[in-house]
Length: 99
Image (cartoon, rainbow, N blue to C red):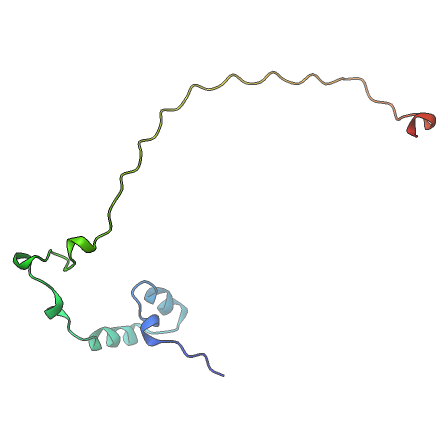
């Protein structure tokens, strides 16, 4: 059974370069897809009618929240003292201590 893929998903501008590179579509197929898209200039509102340069309404734009300023680095804490290790080799327990 052949896998059916929606053509619009192949030519989505977010993934079309990946699909061209993978050989799923050719550049000529993509150009033809772009040429066949309907003209939507009638949906763009002029700037003097309340639109802006990119054609989106200002209320539709995401709200950008400023990040909190980074805290100043604290002074470095003093390094902990090295642990004292018994240098004498340990002996294996005697058979009566092993239990």
